[in-house]
Image 1 (tube, chains in turn cyan, orange, brown, red):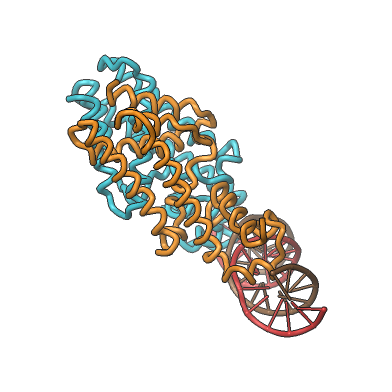
Image 2: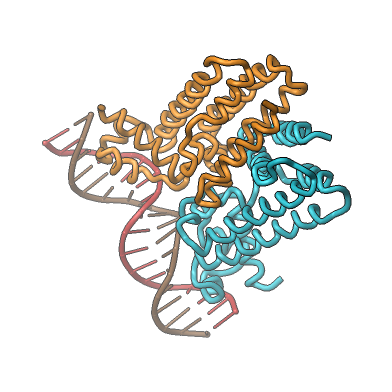
Length: 177
Length: 177
DNA sequence: GTCTATACGCGGATAGAC
DNA sequence: GTCTATCCGCGTATAGAC
């Protein structure tokens, strides 16, 4: 892995763990094993690096979701599979957490991939739920995504994955077999 | 409002807007109209102030919820009323957002009120849902809280309250009349 | 109780040598 | 491309005067 790659990956990890405000160039350099000069040679600064990191994280999240959503089974089974997909629950959602960062939301270039990811996801689920015969697919799609995002919040608050699983299984039960 | 009060209230606002990591003593002092010496006279430092602010915010949130949950109507109507309660959606949840802050989660004194608030809320909803005859009240209660918390995430990502409302109404529909 | 002075390292970056 | 030096203001206090 070359320096550019290591810088981006380190930034992704730190954004996930500590958010944008809590991530310093110095911390990125140390994790990447790169010097000051090296970092500023490859990137214009912290926002530039964050842009690369966030773009990649958002893209990856869509790909992961699409993988399950276009998988085998009836539309409802695929939504259920999406809900039950394995996740690093206690680490939270690497995209959703950015939503809480005022400096990310204030910068159009950083905010856009976050907004697009959730719009895409809601739309994708809406299509499946419509196929499944759900009466209000738009609203239900929002509910599905919200349960996942809110499940992370509950799990982190509790320091335990149980509330996440509960929230997911509670929703699946409500969606009907 | 005396100085102590203004310091706590300013801290509450800043924690809501910018989180713990993004909030500096200097910013607190400026918003409170208090000097450096004044702040350190009344509080031991940033964590001490944050503790007072978070305790109050958590307590207030429980009181607000209890108000609706112990209101008039059938148990299910009260859950619905809780879900439809007015909220400053685009500002996010002042308690839920703390969940994302590594320095808050790392400090037991700061973390405890956050954990307790969500445990209390899930338990309170569980009781109502059990009375309402829900088959799995524990799981459904987690789903209800998660939809609210996740709704905030979606709304902030979109810069628009619509996905929040969609998520809430989608859940209410699933819960049945 | 509040103010001003002082401290020291970090955040975020630029400059220029190698 | 990477390194070291340097910069300036902020974060987070402490000390002591008033």
